[in-house]
Length: 475
Image 1: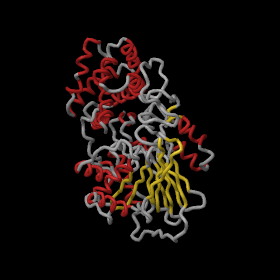
Image 2: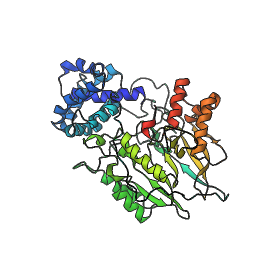
Image 3: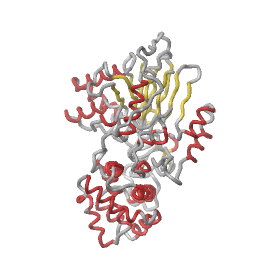
Image 4: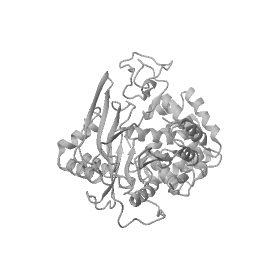
């Protein structure tokens, strides 16, 4: 996790206590990050917060009074240099009640509390994977079907991710938030452009999620549900999905599968928000659920989701459960497609992570760059797909230049089957050829915001590229 992001979540954890205390001890609360220096002290902090959380969610609204008086929230925001006041206020008002619900439901010393401390403050290491074995209807075949290309012309697929639309985006406003806030003062040094600006989310002309962001309750949470959203998706996607897939959207928490017409390829779309560590509804029960809402209880297939299973944002248990399924059906899964990182990446999965090689590489995750220009130029991928094996034969990345609305380019990849073994060999080339590695780093962020990467950094990046299970991610 990046330091500014970690700092914000740390502040988010500390700020709850300002809701329940007088302004006279605000200085002590500002010192709390220094006192919460390890996992044990984070557990103690959660225990202290449980009593005010039991008083009810409405107490959290008092934070606005505190902010208006400039005695609590503003003072702490400035002192900790966390985020713009509007960002702090909005995030706390939306996510605070969810975390208060969590604190009412869990033990402050349990494994769920450890996971919450890892997500919020980064003071606890994620607990090790809980023993869990996926039950399969049939064993892995001794002689699995081989998919052989007949040399036919590939078809193309476009991969978009990270849209992050901001309906309040205002052209010519500051790049801090790119919105027309009435309290904005001072000259605008770098105006927000018509097709997006770095540090900002995507304006409507470029055409993310429901509000609060990333907040999806599990079906074991009483009285709270996002079913309204799945019902809306069922109606909105009726033009593209058949009746079976639409029924799955409603009953499988937004996940669905469908055979592509005229092919033997099935695409499985997983709502992987249920293994994202900043979905705070996942922390409201001390019972560990390796497959919340039964998302993984679902020919040749593609799997599309948002958070890569090897990313540090994927919770260990859910990632491990999914990896077992991938290992069982790796001959059936022709590709996995993700976003979330806002970078042009890939990730290789292995049958044996202790012995990573081209021979043990058996799954590949394609990670698309983002449409939002917040961190780099807007971009998307186009794949050439073998119509017999459904493997990716070529990939192009189309990148926009925000300074030139007419700019368009593409970058060609290798002209052979880009299977897991191929990508493992690419990581081997990165390890020995620093020129190739640095070129990858430039492409990863589309030439913007590329920082120096020494030997230790390179080791971490290569480790990340060799992880489709979050426990094996070194970052």
